[in-house]
Length: 322
Image (cartoon, rainbow, N blue to C red; front, top):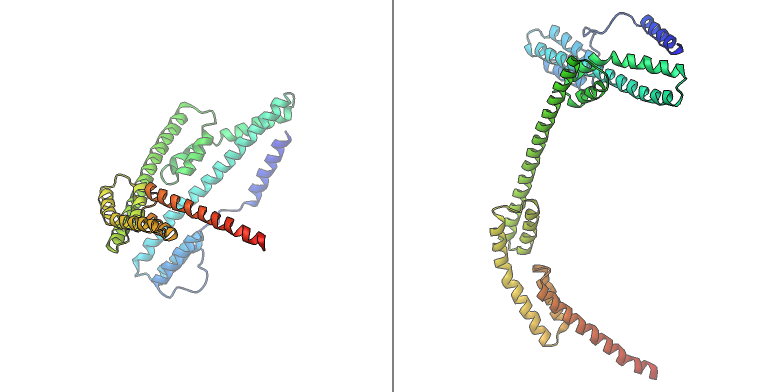
């Protein structure tokens, strides 16, 4: 009962405070008159972008009187007025669905109170009141869903989500089912558009990489070309140009690797172990991970480490004698 009295008093207060609807696009524009029709258009669009719709449309009205021969002013006013009508409807519907969501959550909390205290008539009456208040929003929520299913699907989805929780008749259920079907179709279409956009971006990325690989081959940077082609393979492993470019790069790089390996072998046989290791490591920069070259480096490094140990051991007796 207390809740009902509070709500009644609030309604009366709001009714007393509310005057006649003074919203009008006839509001005088702020600032000096526009110097030209183009300036008026630019100013109106800027104001609309910032959400100052009344000022925007009023500015165009003033400019139309100032430049009556310019038809673009009236055309732009019509476009902006239509946009504002859509924006206003969306804002009002966002208020409706926000209120409904709040009421739905409030009812859920009151359900817990009533479950915990079945004899609490005040909590039960509050729950009943808010259920009735929420039920009254069923038609506005359904209209919200229908109005925004194409232009603002996220808002339409919110309206459907709340409306679906309110007991309804067959007609409302059918309308909500149609909106839900449209939303699913829109989501499928949006998903397909995202897929196509991603594919387009992937194709552009692959093309840029292939162009880079070809340029690297022309500049005899075969290792760089192969590294770039590895990136292509990660994105598009079945690319028809990939195998041919790889074969071209390897055909040029293989003789260089073989020459470095042979030079390293000769240095190793001539007991120039450090130089041999450096030469084989240069070969590895051209052919990373090659097991034969890695084995050579490991063998020579082992010998070098052993020689260092022997030199260290030979120095110890001299240090002890001193």
